[in-house]
Amino acid sequence: MSKNSKDIRPISTSSSIEVRYAETDQMGVVHHSVYPIYFEQARVDWLRLMGMHYQKMEDSGVMLPLSRLTIDYKKPAKFGDILNVEVSLNKLPSATIIFDYTIKNQNNELLTLGQTTLVFVNMATKKPMRCPEHIMALIENTIPKN
Image (cartoon, rainbow, N blue to C red):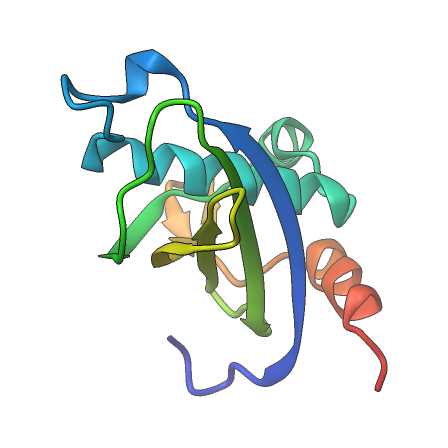
């Protein structure tokens, strides 16, 4: 993370995801490989709610490949659970943007914590770039006051 990144009041959203049978193993427990997909869905929802539809961002020549993923499994999610996936941005982006995730089930039990780091990349040059000004403006305008 860049030294230029500044802590902000968290910008958080929540997504509801029902665990599907295909996401579980024979014991009815969500396979560990599915959690990054849950993170991605919540992150895409977060971007859309901030006014940054992912497809439009890519159409404008900016992509956000994943460069780092951490997951801390606390309790298993199971088939039929309704998951609340909260995603938060706690620092202004630079050339990277870091999201934190909390997954709880319908009983509000903490199941999983995670974090992803994504890099802003110019699609034409395939090189990292700073967060585009129009995206930074959307984020700055969404930071909770007080």
